[in-house]
Amino acid sequence: MTDGPLPDAPLPDPAVRTAHVQEIAPDLLVVPNRRVQLVPNIGIIGGTRAVLVVDTGMGTANAEQVLALAHEVAKGRRLYLTTTHFHPEHAFGAQAFADEATYLVNRAQADDLKAKGPGYLEMFRGFGGPVADRLDGVRPPTPDLVYDDAHDLDLGGRTVRLRPTGRGHTRGDQVIEVPDAGVLFTGDLAETGQFAIFPWFPPYDTDVSGVGWLSVLERLAAGEPRVVVPGHGDLGGAEVLADVRDYLRELRDETWRRRDSAMSEAEIVTEVRELLIERHPEWEGREWIEPGVGCLCAEHSG
Image (tube, rainbow, N blue to C red):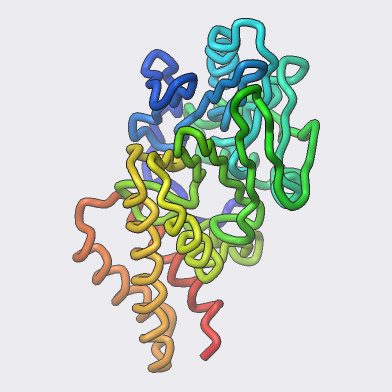
């Protein structure tokens, strides 16, 4: 798979920096991505008996740093790993956790890892430079445990809720809730400071759903979490979810209004892109507006 928004210049090294770890609640840490491309926000959630790691970073070297930090935090407690979705910067370090942690995910994500993981590995290696270096020797991971409808993970004195959301950013998105701390990990269903990432790569991958994604964000925003840990960007409160929800509505409405007038998709892209950049001039990721329009044009019922 090579089609899609490819970088015009070499990407920076997607290095996870565990030295910048932050405690956002008792026994709940986040390794922030520092707004570096292809670096996710990573979580370490502790209970009295076990510790759960959320996302790995890209490649084994990054994941080994995360694993070392998790061992330091756990102090002998059992380790679990989960990932928010199958994309390489979130899940393609899981092999470093083999024999060290139990890797569990929702079934739709496990299916994505198996069916689409190899293609995404090839595509990301095609970025070249430090990204390809990070993926040297990496293989798509295979989870140890797969759940269907929902999973409550008892860490000892703290239960973490793993919940599949249905189609949104991918077919297999999963959110991780820590109810006692009011914390929600969203993966790439929510990000700050940039346009929503639409992995719309027809004919290879068309699982992203703008309509489904908006519905997911409406449900998540209604829960009003205290802290939202987005897939990329700065942590915040419930306003993070509201901002992404409002943008997805805006993208849908502006795209469908023009689709109703029988404009060509190319004309729609030009107009909507110009309008959204004018409204959000400070946001990064402008290259994701066009695939977002393409996805919503395909979902337009007319």
